[in-house]
Image 1 (cartoon, rainbow, N blue to C red):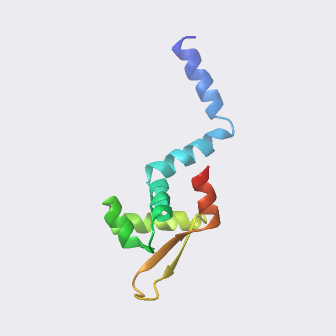
Image 2 (cartoon, helix red, strand yellow):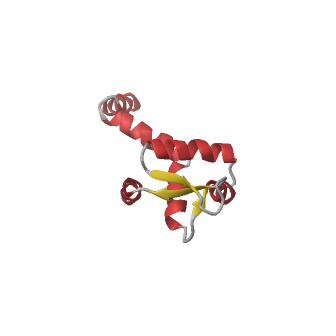
Image 3 (cartoon, rainbow, N blue to C red):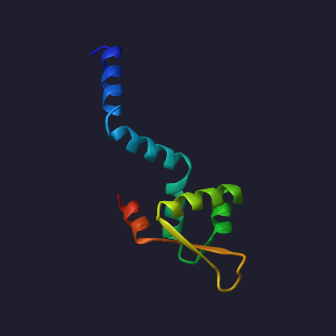
Length: 102
């Protein structure tokens, strides 16, 4: 099989229904969303947004965007800490746990 044939076959497969799904997976991975989910799941204590920023060495603004994305996808839920209302506590939803198993 030559390169053109392989390229045509690849484009054909990705132009069907799986392309968008594959693209979404790649985009989520490149944004670090999976890593954030794993960090939350593996934590033995309450996780706040600042902990994620520190653990992954990324800005708090980037964490805020990632958490908003995860919340929109219903993979996490957030609430204000009982001890400090300025802190946002993050936890996985049931759907978030299922996503990590896949």
